[in-house]
Image (cartoon, rainbow, N blue to C red; front, side):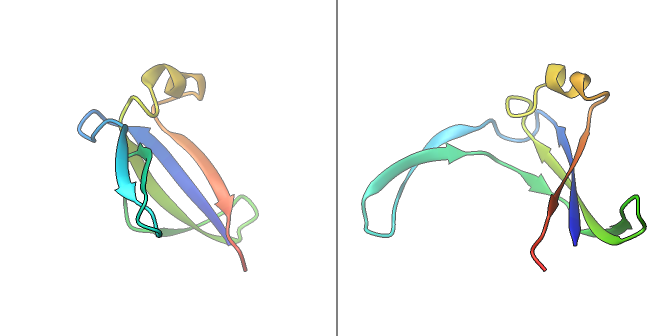
Length: 85
């Protein structure tokens, strides 16, 4: 089943930042923390009429800046990932 993601940005979400945590062995590791707001799944269909799901996702503009959004023709980007059967 296809899964479509509508990706937008808004300044109300936290900016991405480095975060330290303990790994499975108790060692301190550092990685990126990217706050993400995801809406509930909604049923839809793809261009062939096959069933799919769509999620609305919002990130901070530092992750998806407005200038990048304009290159894709608007404030939101629609992309998809194909899930395993």
